[in-house]
Length: 211
Image 1 (cartoon, helix red, strand yellow):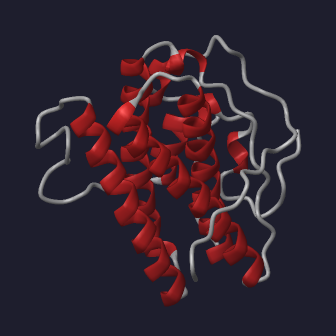
Image 2 (tube, rainbow, N blue to C red):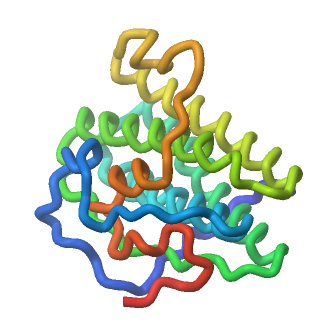
Image 3 (cartoon, rainbow, N blue to C red):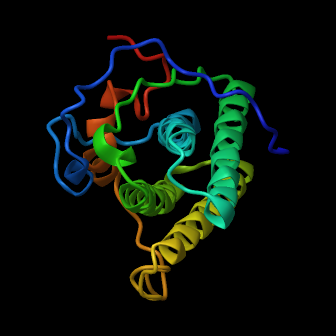
């Protein structure tokens, strides 16, 4: 399926408190729960929720005016990629007869206080996205969908590398994570991103978010 630009669609749901700490990205959270993927729709809606989160993160971050020049050019391109991922996954869910999850409202707290916090949080998000796609790949039943997901996985890894480079991180363990990527379980991803979502249960459900 060809990736196309689209306007970002926001869900009409409640927000999480602004006091949520950015450090929660690397900590556990009570909303995390074990859940298997029962269908390709489940996997796609899981990916869609992550892409909603990333697309809105870059929309807000790029609007904050924290970067300029080549850095802004890179991050504008990343935003465009994430919005395209949202459009593509939504269309794929609908094509196979599923219902795309609604975009959850988000609160990124202090992520946009400075250039460094913006880029550091972006680096964490991108690497969590890489691990999430790799961890969910084995649950995808349709080979065409698996191939498309692999394509997005590769883009997320490139995003992480670009941002690691902008931060001036060490090559291995910073710009790239090693000789192979590490898959993340659904629980691990939920623990990382739940503090920024109004309803973490949306990740993997095949119905719209309701609170």
